[in-house]
Image (cartoon, rainbow, N blue to C red; front, side, top):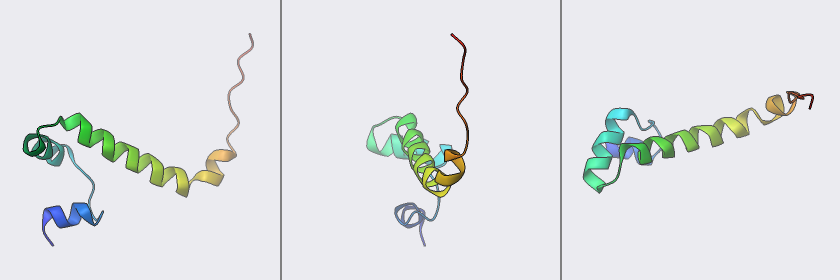
Length: 63
């Protein structure tokens, strides 16, 4: 499986190296690609840890 196939099949994450290369190829920024990966990671973990996160009590600050 080639690198682009691994990316499109979500078999590998976008690394800084990949982000630099995609940015050059598409005329974007590496941050665009890293932010896209971070958003994906947060969504996946949010779903996987939903119940665990729901149990955390929010800090209450006295005002």
